[in-house]
Amino acid sequence: MRQPIRVELEAGKTYYWCECGRSKAQPFCDGSHKGTPYEPRPFTVDKDQTRFLCACKDTENAPFCDGSHSR
Image (tube, rainbow, N blue to C red; front, side, top):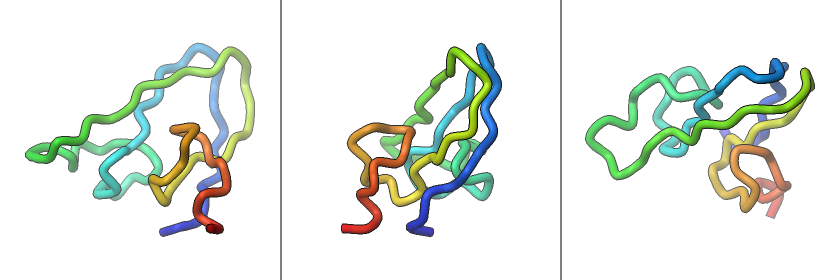
């Protein structure tokens, strides 16, 4: 998947963004990175919000989409 994934995020909750691309629960980690050099990236937001998370894994603003998938 190359397109960003729209998600509803809750303030103060810790999320784990998949960096390896193997997770079946994209864009979040499901532990599929085990045995690879990748680790999930934890993040929180300070207010409830809708955001687009990167699915192409090329973003410079992980875990958020920066449009890299369109280049």
